[in-house]
Amino acid sequence: MTDQQIWLLAAQGVVSLVILGYLAMLLWKKREERERFKLYAVRDKLIYLAATDALPQSSMVFKVFYNVVNISISEVRNLDLASLARASVAAKSALEKEKQEALSAAIARASPEVREVIGEFGKVMMEIAYANSLGLRLFLHCATLAKRILDGSRILTLQPPKPAAYDTYVYWRQMHDRACPV
Image (tube, rainbow, N blue to C red):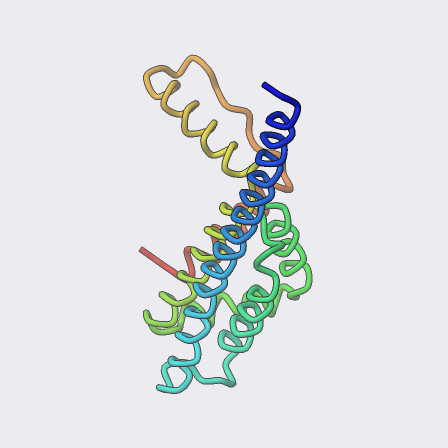
């Protein structure tokens, strides 16, 4: 190979890497848009419920979830497992105990359509956190693999989760159970 051919191959490699990087950036932006549109769909359903008087605009459920969905739409890029957990803990501490119980009671009294939309919001948020968090994906894949390995035997026991992480899990589980009772 001549020097000229080597330089041409190097230039072709650099141009190819630049094009691949650009395409990867476009794919990433399209994924963010797809996630954002899922949240738009949830917001549209909330607005539809308000328009059909299935969920009054003055209700706590509408106000809280409409604001949360709007904030989430603007923060799709930054949503991952850690930020979702921080937001959950912040929301839990920001809502006074009475307000949290009032919101939970309002969700429990809400119509099945309203609970379905709230459940869909939770599902979309978890999908976004999963898509944005490599650590969460690896953890879930490893946990699934470990579960498959341990299903046949009970020789190993798993350590209980740390209290703060467990409290956050219990909080989300209770909110989901109230929104989507089975």
